[in-house]
Image (cartoon, rainbow, N blue to C red; front, side, top):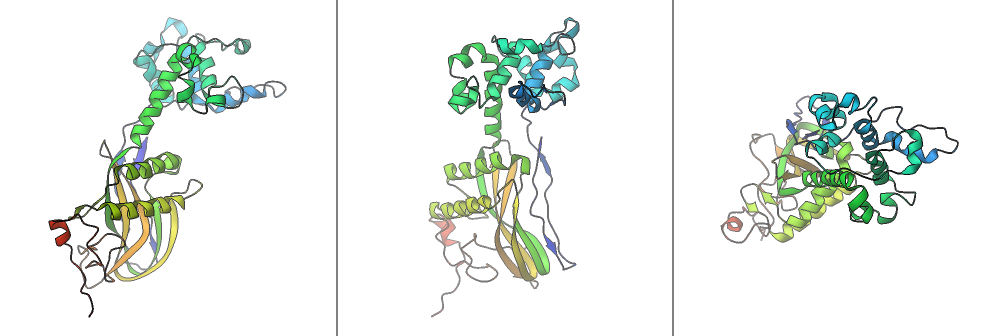
Amino acid sequence: MFSKIAVLAVSTNAASLRGRSLEFVKVSPVPQNTWSPSWGCKRDKGGWGWWTKCEKTADVACAMWATDSEWGAIRNGATLQQTCAHSKWGRTKCASTCAAAAANFPGDNWEAGRWKTFGHASPEVSCALWAQEDEDLWGALTKSGSLKKACRSPMGLNKCRGTCQRLLGLLEDKKAQNDFTGFEGRWQVAGSGSTVQTTASSSWSKTTSTTTANGFTTSLGVTASMEFADIGTLGYSATNTLSTSVSETLSQMQGGRNSITCGSEHCDGNLWQWGVVGTRADGTTERVSQCAFVCIGIDKPITVKPKCPRGFCGDSDCQCCNSNEFAPAGDARDSVRMCAVAD
């Protein structure tokens, strides 16, 4: 899996617009099962409707593959560990199952009788079905509401221990990938020219929008800390205000969207857009750009940036600030260039 760190898409009717984007950054992959064969668990609609759920579940399909001695991983006397070690397909399509095998996770021991009719009586298949079920009373998610709670029950601790250990490990890895350890407010060039059609956006893909957005806002709220340019760490009040604005921006990106339209901005020069960049423990980053812009005239080079955080600009091109309260007390606050106060 890769996370594309992409700054907003900007369109313009001015020939001189320069859109900016960053490079792809590789994120340490979380092993996941992705194999969902078309044959899945299709059955006659008359009486087996409950069974059709597992058709779309890669965990169930990979559990079938891992425990089948006719066509699956253990055919011809091979072990699952041996097949995973020599099968690129297995390590790719059933990555979570193979990773659990390599780590010698404990096995499952629940054989649900109702499924023996279909030739898939292995404990691993039974537990994979149990772990995903959220309607029938026998399912892990029906009463508990979460797999973590279900796995603390006698069923999870005894009969489906291996499945619980694998899936909970996967959940923890996903959580870690969406924990951010630092944040920085930045101005970045959105374009230059006359009239610019602008958008606010998040750098993550639609497929990871909910988990990443939640991780971004939760981590920002927990750390309550944000850096800005040469000032260093912003004060609590400023950070809290800017954090709230990030949450408001993301709340407008509903239905899996990762961008919203800001409108047209007229700028005879360089148009700068405010954004907040979050950094994970592994150094990878994500960005939320917002509908906050500053135009710096064409008479100034592109190296001239806004000098204040969003909301603290004291003039049109943000070269002086309306307050220095966003900076920590001491030299950093004293270094803030304040706009002259009219008499």
